[in-house]
Length: 77
Image (cartoon, rainbow, N blue to C red; front, top):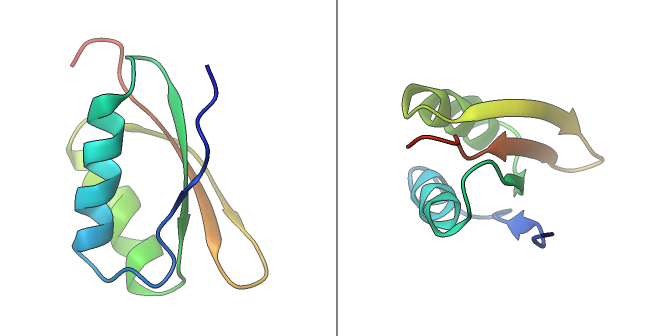
């Protein structure tokens, strides 16, 4: 199953974290979510907060004006 990227560019903290977490909770366990985040506070805070919540960060890739975060919903949550 493929999900379209969650585009949170321009979304302030902590709303971008809350939206990411809500989206992950709607997904089947084990699925991968791609999130687009701005540089600065969003890319610094969101991955750290997701890790604390038990999510696995697969990768963080820089693009021209934003970052692509790939996070996996745990199998057992």
